[in-house]
Image (cartoon, rainbow, N blue to C red; front, side, top):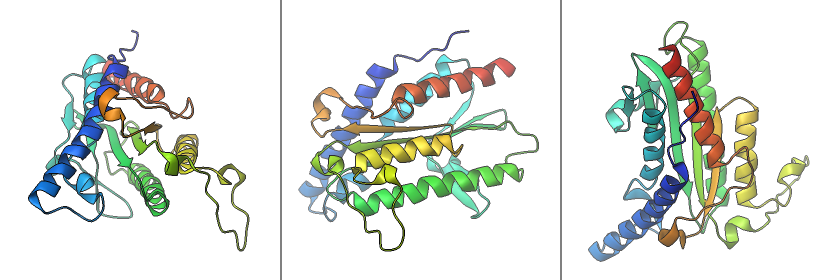
Amino acid sequence: MSLDLANYEDQAREAVKLFWGNREAALAKQIESGSQDAGSRGAVTAGKNMDGFLVIAQTLIEANGLGLADICVTQRVLTLPGFFRPTKLWDMLVMYRGELIAALEFKSQVGPSFGNNFNNRSEEAIGTAHDLWTAYREGAFGEDAPRPFLGWVMLVEDCVKSNTPVSDKQPHFPVDPAFKRASYAQRYDIMCKRLVQEGLYSSATFLASPREAARDGSYRHLSELTSLKTFVTEFAGHIAAVAARK
């Protein structure tokens, strides 16, 4: 059976427009009410800006034979046990007949500050995956449980600061050559590729999108391995495989 990619490109453009539109609306509402957070934090804390990408995942699940799966997106049902910590709250879980099918994270970052946020996102992505796979190895999701799909989607503002080469201090040992003079956009892309290559994630996507995309939903990727098409194809394939063996 061929995979159904569920017209993901059109859905992705709508998801990007929703992302930027939600940010603008949330910030405008907080300014109007006089309760604006520091900087642009209000746009981050006021809404679920990545909800459009959750819709893409849900559509792929239904289109590839697992329409009866439990798609968890509300906070009370998004917790999984960990190994180094008691629990972790995910952005989306896919369950079917008591089996964990997929765990997905949808994250974003906009300027003007990219440095500390990049490190925080990196540590979060790496630690989250390592914690889950260790818990999986120890039987936290059931004895002989099939390996779930682990996905990470990152949307970053496509702007001058995210595309400017970055210098690093190297007082003791040289930085990995791949990161030397790489912009934050390039660093995210490198990280996503390595998350997949090292087996931490089934698929990791990096998308760059400018603020003006609120009008047309435009976005771009930097490499094939981290493209949205790769994520969609890998995810649809996993869902179809689960449906076939059920």
